[in-house]
Amino acid sequence: MMEGNPILTKPLVQALRSEIRSALAELRQRQQAIGLLALVIASEDPAIQVYLASQRRIAENLGLPVQVVDVGPEVTQAALTSTLTELSASHQVAGIVLELPLAGHLDSEAALSAISGHKDVEGLGPYNLSLLAAGREGEALLAPTPLACLTLAETQVALQGTRVAVIGSGRTVGKPLIWMLLNRGATVTVCTPHTRDLAELLSEVEVIFLAAGKPKLIGPELVRPHHVIIDAGINFVEDRLVGDADAALYPLVRSYSPVPGGVGTLTGLLLFRNYIQALRWGMAHGG
Amino acid sequence: MMEGNPILTKPLVQALRSEIRSALAELRQRQQAIGLLALVIASEDPAIQVYLASQRRIAENLGLPVQVVDVGPEVTQAALTSTLTELSASHQVAGIVLELPLAGHLDSEAALSAISGHKDVEGLGPYNLSLLAAGREGEALLAPTPLACLTLAETQVALQGTRVAVIGSGRTVGKPLIWMLLNRGATVTVCTPHTRDLAELLSEVEVIFLAAGKPKLIGPELVRPHHVIIDAGINFVEDRLVGDADAALYPLVRSYSPVPGGVGTLTGLLLFRNYIQALRWGMAHGG
Image 1 (cartoon, rainbow over the protein chains, first blue to last red):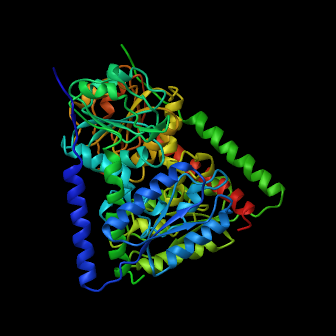
Image 2 (image 1 turned 180 degrees about the horizontal axis):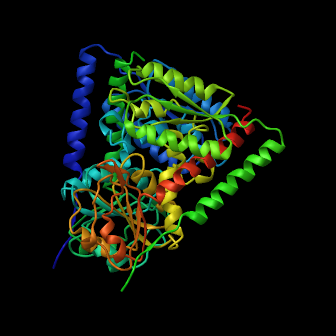
Image 3 (image 1 turned 90 degrees about the horizontal axis):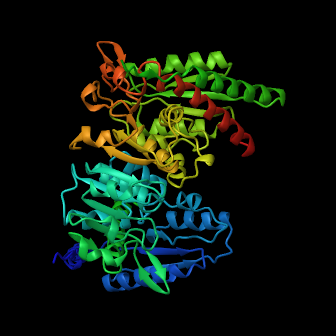
């Protein structure tokens, strides 16, 4: 019987961790300040506590200082903007994470645009988005979740010239992922909830990226033995973390990145690799 | 014999022109300043003279004032940024066009980000791009060329749930077009120069958008009788304007938007419709 293989993240995690550690050691050796990462919270969303715990744990493990800046779920847009502007100008702060989602009355686009592009380690603000559009990824901080998706897929296939599908085209994962895939020469089909004949369409692609945030978005009936499944879904079902793929499809495909244990194991480290990059740019810009 | 139909722009042009004229008449009746549109040039590219002539002609026809700000092809990045920042702050200037391409030594991303998002009537800067990513098109100024592509396609098909292909994923047309199509629920396949089996892939879609900037990018061998072809290519071959489609395919498809006479007839008017929107926002923001 055919059996799908889980895509192993351990080698990638180890490589990323050692890359970050070496970079940090080098910075310390040259007696350069390593700054701090500001984690800004303006929300009571319980998911944020999960992200926060994970980010603090990784930071501690790497020996990088973080500072939680909780401005409270009642903060005004103006006060949030002014906090983000101050952090962007601070010489102590080398990176800023605005934990999403924000409280409902806040405008996340306006908030993201108040973060200096060189400190936007989530890579979601307009500055990094427009560099991504221009194909100038080397000058940008790239959003960790889509970048983790790419990294996992590239362990299975060469993306250039390969047909892939992205299901879900949201602001934080799907849309930047599509541009990153195009920058690598993949032929990308993007599916929405209105897509017809999904099974037939998917049969033509090699890699399926799931980024819709819907549990059981695709199940066994939609996959084929040649498929590579990269699941970026983060859903809580009865307090259990699940992805967008129905786990019943795992045995039916060539390989898959499961949730938990896939994309999410890389995103935190990619965020801190962005932090190292931000630190270098901060020094180069004298900020 | 089957015969492809050119998609007529005349009714769209008339509707746009009358929409802009009514809006202007209303603003004038309320004795509101109509400002001016600044056309900024930092290049010797001959194509820019073509755009400029067209923008001036449309402005004159509508009775809208433009001001050409030619900073010369030798301008420094800092001086260009400062010009754009000043124009963005000026109460007289309600809209700004940075004519692309810039001279080779200039960074267009940096320059675009110096234009106030509310005056960026080309809709290409990071502010409007990130609103587009968020699906908040109603708050954005939308790039005229991709919007013209959509408008023409919508005269032929309902985009929601329809399979379309975009060939070319550049910064100014392809990438924003993809996001606009996704925001409308189309199932979008994006092709790059690495795409294999293009004919088979294209046979599955209803609409083909051409945005690669390559003459004869597709010819008769790649199209089918059910295809709608929207050509956004602007190429000069022996001083003659041609699109990305080989005109020999026109008789073989359901309908097509030719070059010249298609997308380009709408972009100028869509730019001035953005100007009207910018003018309204300028008043609302007291700027």
